[in-house]
Length: 202
Length: 251
Image (tube, rainbow over all chains, first blue to last red; front, side):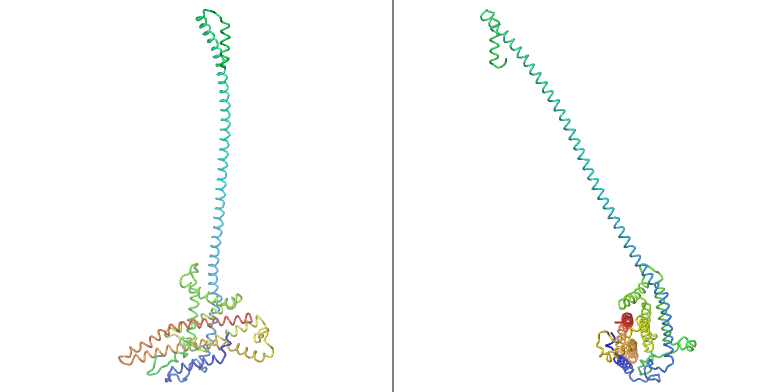
């Protein structure tokens, strides 16, 4: 640290600065009789008094600063540091709170979405089930009606076919009687029966 | 205090006189001490009145007080470490006392108490005694090992020990002479150029014109001296911190 600046160097500096001061004084006739630097006039009793007073003033200043003034500054700086830290802490807490709130909101949204989707699916299923049962019932009724209608149609056809034979037999008898003057009812009936059977309508 | 006739009197500004009238004369209270009192009052007022608002967002004065506080605190903690916090009030007092002495001395009619080798040596002696006492209190007899670094060959001891002792003893001298010489040189220069202004100004018609040159030099010098005033206070404080570091850690 100060080793490169030995005593000799500092004394040289002192000497040169003093010499410079005296030199710049230009060899002027000074009012003071000493002729040198007043700082080096150690015979002056004020010199020692100055140092003694300096020690007193410096000591009092140190006491006042160390015990009154500086602790106040320390407390103010500490207060500020704590305030800033507290604010940061509060901000961090608020952020955490906001994060949890956001997460809760997201959770709630997801849950609501899932719920609604489940409800939609359920409703859809129920509707489909209902529709299918209705469909089945309708199909069954329609099949029943179709069956009944077919039965009716077949009976109607049977009766119609029976009526057809009678009409045909009667017509054939009438035509035979007109043409031949003979009444051969049984033979005609057999012929008609045969003809109908041949046409597949018996 | 200005030029008497055709002479340049650069040194009488450093002469000690009595202050505070007959009371001051009775106890040899000098004008140097009066300016010490002014400096101390300014420091205490800055640190108490300035900090009085205790504001979270400081005003100008409070910001200035806090800046000085934190500047010196960083300096001490940076050099000595956290165990150096106990010496912070001392270094702060020293720094502010030297700084205010240097700066107040730049005002017209003011006396620069840091331009007295007796004062600066007194301060350096306080530092020297304090650091030595701290070292002795913390390390006891081990402190004397400071003068012989561990690991050095023993046969070098007759060379190393005297060198280390002299360098240790020269600390207060270098510390005090540096500040004293800087302050004296600055004030002598200021005074010489100020006298040139007066002397040249009296040289007939061209006088005032020529006199502006030394005046301009003095304007520049005041700025330079403000820098030196701060720099020397800083150097004083940081060297004190370095010595305290040595005292606390022994290298």
